[in-house]
Structures are given as C-alpha cells and as structure tokens.
Image 1 (cartoon, helix red, strand yellow):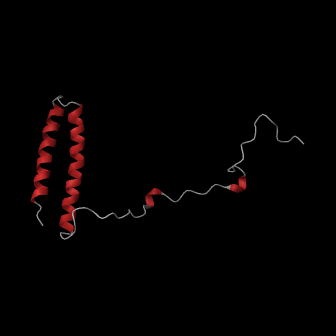
Image 2: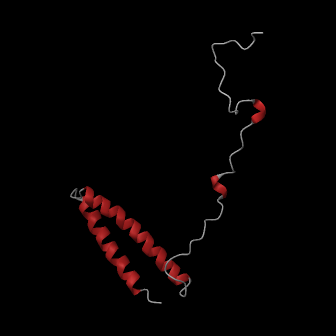
Image 3: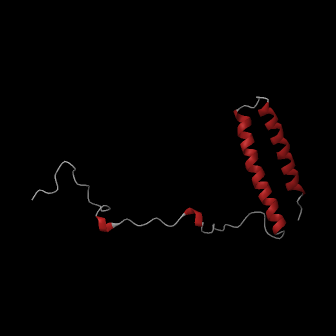
Length: 104
C-alpha cells in the first residue's frame, strides 16, 4: 500500500486552493477561478475518501463497490397512500363548483 501518490495529490490541491483563496481575498479571482476552487473541493473530498479507504482496508481495490445506501430513518416513512374512502382521490373529474350538488 503506497499512500505517497495520494498524499502528494492532496498537498498539490491544498497549495492550489490556498493560492486561489489568497487571490479571492485580494479580489483578483474571476469566475473560472471560483469554478476551479469548487472543483478542488470535490477533488480533495474524493482524495481524502480514497486515502481513508486505503488505510481502512489496504487489500481492497481503490474503486468502491456498487453497494446501495442503507435506509435512512431521517428521510421519513413511506408516503401514505391516498384515502379513497373520502372520494377525493378518484380518476373522475372534479365536480363543477357552479352547479349545486343538492339538485334532485
């Protein structure tokens, strides 16, 4: 397990990020610089995640397996089905509000 390439990549990204932040503080960062700063954040996140995976399991491949996320209790329960007993959720068109319903 060789961490050096990942650590070198992280160091280079951090140096570039610091340079861009300095330019931003000076008011010299254009839209492309801001876009690059956002891209660097994503690359750093991926690099750190790769390094953590390598340290946690040195024998595993670098690409994560395609494993679905476990259910998240914070997403809430499944939506409640429509209440058909109220007659509101049918496929029939809504009644015309201008026609009284109590006409014999």
